[in-house]
Length: 208
Image (cartoon, rainbow, N blue to C red; front, top):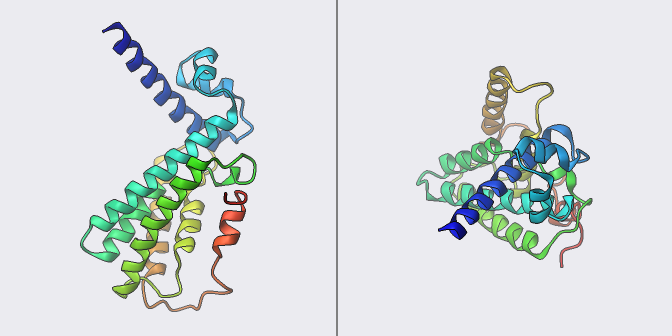
């Protein structure tokens, strides 16, 4: 019983650390000291370093979690019978948990094998969601999966100043406008070529 109790406490500490790390890094910047994370999580520095030896390890874990949640959001969208509703559900879910908030660390940390594998799973699920919406004629034909990913990144950025109901209302309003802009057939031609996979992944580093 004592062992299970310690394991449960360790799991709770890890969850608090991850939640605090995401909040600190995405609001205070990625140069924020890990001591700020431990303080917000209510754990000692020893507990943090026993779980994550470096800030990079912590960021790598946060990236994996964000992509795993994106996979779940895409699968939930695919389970929705209506292709447009499913796509919109996916975008709103990803914006809700700010799946693109860690994009600024691209190129500053080593990309692990687990990160690449999880990214592939996320890409595949999202690609299916987008393909289904294209086939149904509800998503404008010139919008790609990477367009969606970059749109989610933009909405994942924290608003200036402290969080408030007004900020959330404005974000929801702008997201509704953006989603309507994704609907087929589209009125304004999109400028330039769509983002390439090479450019998108190149921000993080060379794929193994």
